[in-house]
Length: 365
Figure 1 (tube, rainbow, N blue to C red):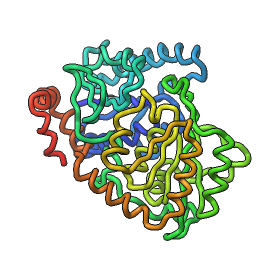
Figure 2 (cartoon, rainbow, N blue to C red):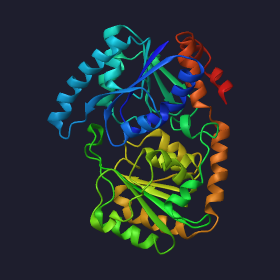
Figure 3 (cartoon, rainbow, N blue to C red):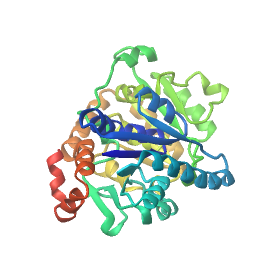
Figure 4 (cartoon, one colour):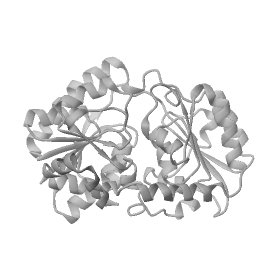
């Protein structure tokens, strides 16, 4: 089987990497990644030695983004014409859905973000199956399969993620030394219009306060201001999850990294415009209300978020409680990668089985 996986974000490389290794190396299917050049996406694909083709760079403004849609559609069409995939797979990719329609091949999409209707309008009509987490609030009708997990468990489940403590030496941190990771996002993607994160003044303030109790590292999409540049985390993107696992605290305005920290059992605080708004997403609500491993605060509550971060950072043994809560979550959820391998290999029979018997997926616990 030939599988084309379209990547839109660095996190999607992690999402599909274990699937690609199992399907490619163990089961001898042919895998090709396509991607746009965003942040460290190509760096990760190179690091993991995946076969990939870049469709070009993302636009910087609305005009460039609109032109880019046509360009990426055409480039992916040309690549698919040569590769001849049997299945297109993506994290809600517009371009993969369009190419699959042209070639009359199935497009399987994963989706976990409710408040992007304009994006869903562009890919949903051309997609055969949409896999969403169990508590996803939207109903996509007969195309939708709800699975008992989070996308991030495809790479952070203990079956696949084994934290490497050597990252501590790279960070210059002793084994029992406290450190916090802060993540600041640029919010320049098309679906981020109107979304805001921490102010510059509050970034300075929280760093100054947290470093009274331990070390502080910053991961940032944009270039950091001179006052914050020295806190930039200096490790490979492939080591960031190791650093998150051993961290005492995570705080930021990122969506993905907040979920990752929570699923790794690190006390996590997320603060941006979407949090606690009418556009809030189901995965964040579940992590906060059901498992109590993530705190969601609106950007209007920046001061409260910072105060809570300082409180968490000062406390002793808080991480042990978070690890216990994480274990409860892992007991409830399935192995997302194993589920995805089965679903793709057995498609379309797998789709028919889950439409009739959703609990069949529990065999992947």
